[in-house]
Image (cartoon, rainbow, N blue to C red):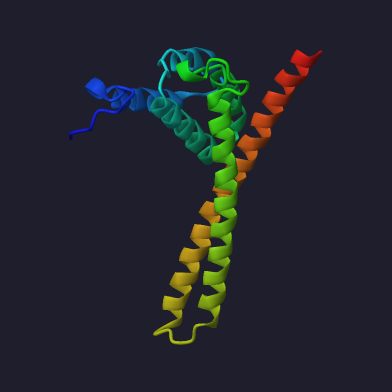
Length: 179
């Protein structure tokens, strides 16, 4: 596939594809036991472009939200990745990783609420519908909506867990630096 050259030059020689593959691979393997080693390897991936930062935030966010049991581990990873500075943001007060992650958490929170409202309206409409061929057809549609709601609830819980653990990590560090 042909990818156009970006102004940052980040696309040359499949750099983004390789970065994505490596970052995703490390995030798939990370556990509390191997956290130290893999987090160092992830930092060594040279996140020096906005495109790489966006990918890193998205991968960490998705993994953390879908695996709430590891949200503390991912919050620790976010704390470490908060040290990343892009060349154009060396003097920023808030790290670009932290800022992008906070924006992603907030966006997801409001999107999930909107999606939940849509599912509730669909369920209400489904319950009022009377032109079903069979009762099992209606039940099949109800079960699908309940499945979608369950997936959404799991993602919402993951988002809340990551948010809480992320803020706990940030506040601990922030309060220590104020002492």
